[in-house]
Figure 1 (cartoon, one colour):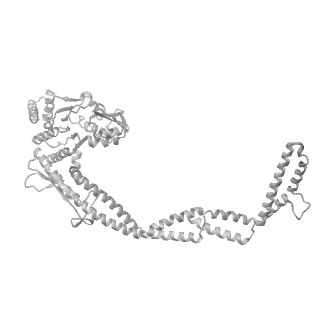
Figure 2 (spheres, rainbow, N blue to C red; figure 1 turned 90 degrees about the vertical axis):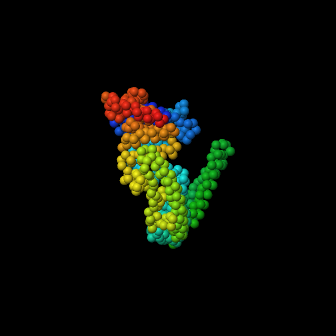
Figure 3 (cartoon, rainbow, N blue to C red; figure 1 turned 135 degrees about the horizontal axis):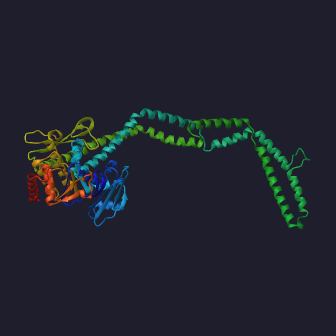
Length: 572
């Protein structure tokens, strides 16, 4: 990894080798920046506070060796990334304003893509994880994670049934709780549908009646206008001497007919006058028919207005026009059918709920059985690890309990409380020595013992996690002496099958590393490119001496450091 402008680190390169790498240095020198940098590369949350004061941005770049065809490579290629000679290049930039950008294999990608790859690339274990494991829900999650498919498969079935039961219960409660409201809604819908059915509106009827009312309301004026127009076009029988348009046009046509043979242009005009005469006749005939057909019956007008009033009463309540009223009626009829079916739906949901509760009880029992079996293996594995960590007489076990609840699901003949992860309360117990009763690890272990128990748990996890790299961030805190030597030895054994990186303050642990990196500050308080270096030979002895006694040149510390290195080499 190359780290620039991150925390106290100005510009440094961290070269991690295969096997076991220990990262050491004075308190505050920036060792934890290795963990922070790796977290950023793996999609961790960006924080502007990480950017070195005075810098515009912090940049972390990493080169991770991967195997062609594995799931990490396939996901990276889906995101557009390209491999660089069998390695995946990842970079993360955090600006002083808190904005973050991520690149994978030369392509800009969402930070979430890095997080997707994280679980398959690196397992990070630190003191935060230890504290988290003191919580009961985290202990259950840890057990489930250790158990693998033995728990994951029945848990997936249980979760699916649990979600369905929750959905059915919510719907059933809603229907029952809102029964009165739904009954009131149904009554209102019935009233509206009955009112509309009583009027029996037709589509477009309101427009037709409006036109008819307008015509009937002005029948006298319309009749007078049509009669006058007819007289102007075709003459008035009561005034034989009057001049009308048809007579004038006919006279004009006759005048042109007499001379049309002498000029084609005049002949064409004569033809047009003939057409006008025909058109005038047609219009006059239609005017006569209109006047004859016009109904000025006040009774019909009254009926039309009455019908319009009935339609208006509907549009005031159910829509802007008759079409909207009919749409409301259609939708309300469907809703009423749904509401009227509540009783039947309640019966269906009740039966489904009871069946799901019974199914959930069976799945919960299977889940408990799988956890119980996995807990025995997990506890045995952790107990064996404790023997390697200078706690040969300690015993770890799990308590798997259920809480009775009259409203719960029936498991093994009794109703118990249930949740999204089953019915089990899982608690990790420790008996530190023979004769001591098993107690919760938070209460049954001293600080050093707790660190060793947690480390044992982490090591057991590491043996089951299918990831190539493990990072331990000072999980050896609170441990010293012989126990620290055993921790170093155990981590070295783990490093035979995986890459292990340990940020540590213990020389007993660092001595077992295949490579030791020293992080040190310059005089101005920063870590530069030369501030992270590989220790070999005399330099490594001096650093171990400092870690042992705080004095690099102490002969006693040097002798002890050389003895630690010799012990570690003998174990290799």
